[in-house]
Image 1 (cartoon, helix red, strand yellow):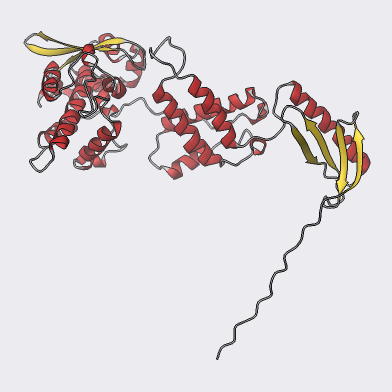
Image 2 (image 1 turned 60 degrees about the horizontal axis):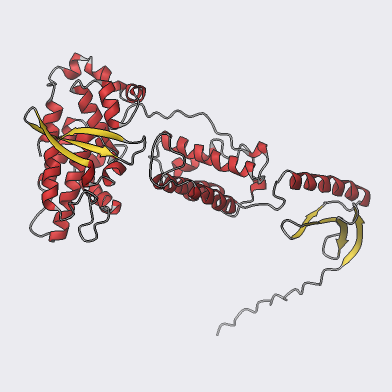
Length: 422
């Protein structure tokens, strides 16, 4: 028979009531210097902050009364200076700072015009900022961390290491963009008096490494449109077949016009016109809401819009081209991403690094058009970028065009043939 080992029961300690043992008023009663039964004989500082309607308390970390009086005077003057300068007296957490910053950004979301010359940010930009500060900045610092604990070298090297550990495939340009937002958050904190100027983050030098864009080459693009040929089957519901058709046209139009993902989702039938030129059906898309303002995009494959219109019941000029067939709302992003991921997963593109995104279709359009000898000035206007941007980010295409080894079998409009195949 085994006997149960007796354990000593921990006695619950009863905390004694705090009692001040010494106290002295300073600065006309604005400051109370005191020590008590639970302060270990160290002197404490107390001052009423009328703006916050509560006392500011701090240990002076000394048992010497003369030293305590000297330190309390310094703290009193420092606190008064902060109040006159509009700075916060009580420490703020990272989460409180983020919430305050996001409230300010939400006020900046503009309604209506979007792009160059317009004040404010888009809904999409706000979502990006929120992700950058809530997921990445808060994840790195910790939501409950006090701002007073942060130094200007808190982020240096450590933030980049944190992001790469969390996501080994994260691009330099992504980290640089996140760092820019984090810097804005801390400048906001400085303006609000939540931090000192020597707490604004410093980062190590990084290059964006984004000169070469991730366009599909001819074989990769060919694999995509061949896959789209057999993308539907009899076992699917009519709703799924229709969704897949819409996604197929969405992909093909992006690749033939160079429009941005968000621009095409916002496109309405009233923005689209079809015309024929040189026995080829082409399209003209009026971009009302875009990253770089309004513009008119001229693209090939106007027949894609003709085929798409036969599929949908939402054909009025104010109806979205890519639409939820049941509600008439914009076609869901989630559905577009779901089918795009399926395409990548079921082709050799699953091994491509970095992982292909919808934006690759825009780069593919630009690359193929440059190979087809479209003047860069015309192309830049069509895609809504400066000539300098195109020359910088697609320089590799211009170099490859000069190489006989890489271009000797290239036919002038072969890129168009590939894009028009389906």
